[in-house]
Length: 254
Ligand code: PGA
Image 1 (cartoon, rainbow, N blue to C red):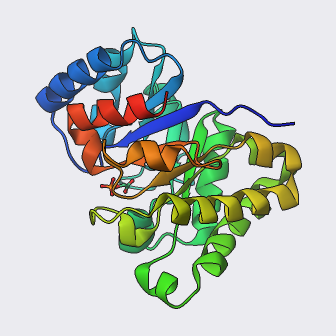
Image 2: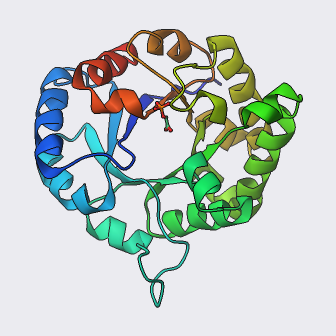
């Protein structure tokens, strides 16, 4: 049985934004995507803008709020951290877990990313858990090994009961912010590896889990990557800050 997975386009603003920028960007994006009801759109601004963005998108049920990170802990003496229950309070539906910039600059390990994924699910939020190899790993033929290792940590922690609640994002590190996107075939190959790995734990989850592609997605290349069988959407960084680009990407997903 083939399952129809509605496409999802996620805007990862990273550490960009301001109140007035959020207002004008969202005004354009909401207007430009008004008639697109067959795509799930998720906006992930920095923490301080979450509540504000929640208000701006409130009247648009097809647009949801997401956070870029969360703590693996539920509360306590963790200065500067934000828990998944707080994100829920702020109106989030999604949380990006284990983005490569978190892995790289904040030393997040596979195990920690898996714990964050579960902490998110425990608050009835949906994790978007990222995996992906570096350029060096790809060039030395280690892509499959690295991605499977990252996926296995999540599969192990979630188990069969929770795994179908995870959305995965394949984000090759060499493609992020470089202008050099993976080709549609390169993306499809790794997405297939990921889906097959999920299938080793749960066939049902393999059929239903969304796997997004991220890394230099633009209005020009989105349609080609989205046409691949195992690509269920995109995680968009730079192009999510430009309304015209982001709208094009959302249109390509319908
Ligand atoms: P990019 O970033 O679209 O700017 O390459 C993607 C990401 O890091 O999620």
